[in-house]
Length: 302
Image 1 (cartoon, rainbow, N blue to C red):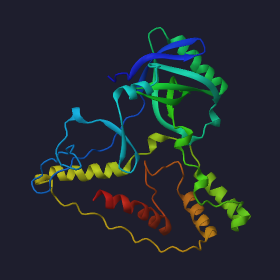
Image 2 (spheres, helix red, strand yellow; image 1 turned 180 degrees about the vertical axis):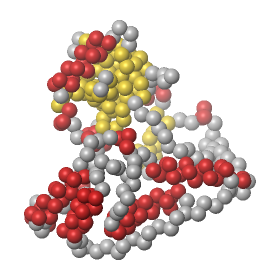
Image 3 (cartoon, one colour; image 1 turned 90 degrees about the horizontal axis):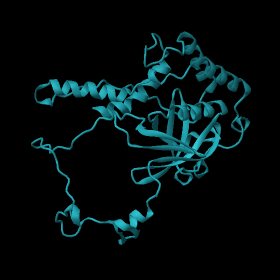
Image 4 (cartoon, rainbow, N blue to C red; image 1 turned 90 degrees about the vertical axis):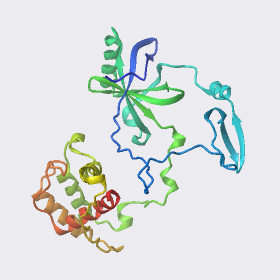
């Protein structure tokens, strides 16, 4: 059974709801070890002095900030503790805002708030009030030694704590060269816009995240299983040849592509996602596009 990261309170106004902070994500990354190719023995990474090359024991390592090239200021543990937040084991809601006002780019990591014993009433009261008003609570929370900005959001029967990025952590899109202006400025005619709208509507469906899977991980696991079964785990895995990518130019026939997409989508209902069943028939253009997209993943897996 999963253990809570901490047990404390969810505070808003004068109300305090005992809660446990639980992880809201499950990492499924494949982890690899570095080996010496000559004898297949694990490689150990050591902490060495950059000048002498001697190994440095943990007790002799200190934290420092490089404020200029080659110039450092050392921080003592007391300095770090003095900057650490005082409030621990508390989700302290400071304000309530409309959920629609938060840019999705601010959301970073989910946690689940689980009510403590005999704390269900306050928990449900906040959950249902947030749902009825369309609001989310903006709170500060300390996880381990760092303070985070977060949002308390109702999700089904749960109150979910979503860590938020601070404003200074986001890159302003205006820093990049982006196409400004209206559709007319790019010679997009009404017919192209209409067909693009039809294509989007024909492909529309319900958001079902369980229908989507990490295909790269699945292919990589299959490769690993083959190598494990092979003698010594060193068998060579033959990769399927990738389709040749078509040469592209700056001139794109949007009308033709939209028409082909609409025709293909009429033959293949949008509800049958690639994660469940692959369409029986596809146009040559869609085959080439799909192969071109998958090609980097296969090269990476091989």
